Length: 413
Image (cartoon, rainbow, N blue to C red):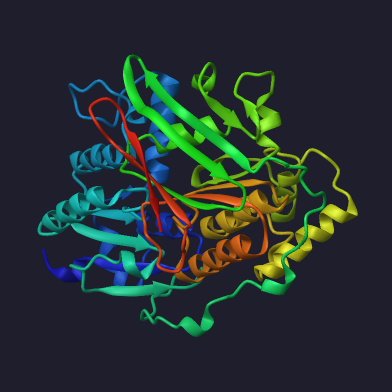
C-alpha cells in the first residue's frame, strides 16, 4: 500500500470533528482526501466504542468482542476495549480506518502495543489519523496536515507558540461563598480494599490527602484508578464499613452522597455525554454552582457575574450564548473544567482533563491548573497517563497491579 494513502491530520478544537468524520465517510471529500471517496471506511473512536457499549447493554448482546469470549465491552479495561474494537473494525474488511485520537486513555505500555500494531497494519490498510496534539502524530505516516476551521481545508502543520492563550492570572474570580472547611485532612484511606465478585481490585490502600496539595494519580489501565475516585466521591457503596474518612467524617456515619459532593469539583471526559438538554455554555457552567447536570435553578446576578469573569479569564466570552452541544468537543471539556472549579470547592478531581484538547487549549488548561495551585487553597487530584513537563504535582500516588489487587505507592516529586 502506497504511503500516500495514509494521513495524519491535526485538528483544532474549533473544528466540528463529527461533521468532518461524516464528510469523510459520506464520500464527499475533495483535494488530497478525494482518493477516499471510492473506498470503504470505518471509524475507530472512543465515542463509537461507547455507542457499542450502550447498544450491548440495551439489547444484552456481545456484538463487538471476539466470538467465544461472550464478554461485553464494558467489562474490559480501556486498553482492552480498544484492542477488541480494532479487531471488530478489521473484521468489517474496510479499505481504510479513521483513527480518532486512538491513544487517548491508554497507559504507556498499551500505547506502544497499539502503535506497533497500527504500523504493521499500515502495510495492507489505509489510515486517516485525527489527533489534537502534535505529539500524537503517527511517526510512520509521511502525509500530514492541519485543519483549523469548518472549511475542512488542509493546511501545513505549523507549531507557533506565540498563539498560545494564557490565563489572566490577576483575574481569577473569588468564590461566591467561602467553603467552611476546617479539616486539614480531606481524604484518608487506612487500608481500604475493594473487591468485585471475589476479584480484588485494590488491596490495603493507605492514602491521606491534605488541603492545598496537588496529587497526580497514575497506574496502568485496569489498575483501579476509577475505583479509588468513586470511593472519594462517595458513590461507591464499597466504602461502607471501611476506614475511609471524607472531609472529617467516616464513610457511613450518616452523611449523604450530596454532603460529600458539595465539597468536590469533578471533571471527566465522559461528562460531555451527560449534558443532553439544549442549554448554552453559560447555563452549563452555572449548573456547577448547584451540582446538577443542567441548569434547573434560577441563578442570581452574582452567579452570572462570576461566570462572565471566568469566561474572560480563559478567553471564550464570545461563546457564552452558544449551545453547549454545538461546541467542539475540546471547548466542551474546557467549559466543564471551569464548571468543576467555579465554586472553589476544597477538592478538585480532574480525570484526564487534557485528553481531546488541542495544543493551544492543553497549554491553557495546564496554565489554569498551575494558577489554581498557586493562588487558591484548593486540593487537586489530577489523573493522567501522560507526564506533562509543565505540570508539577507535589506528590504522585501510583497504583501497581498485583495478583491480589493493586497496591498503592506514594512518590514525592
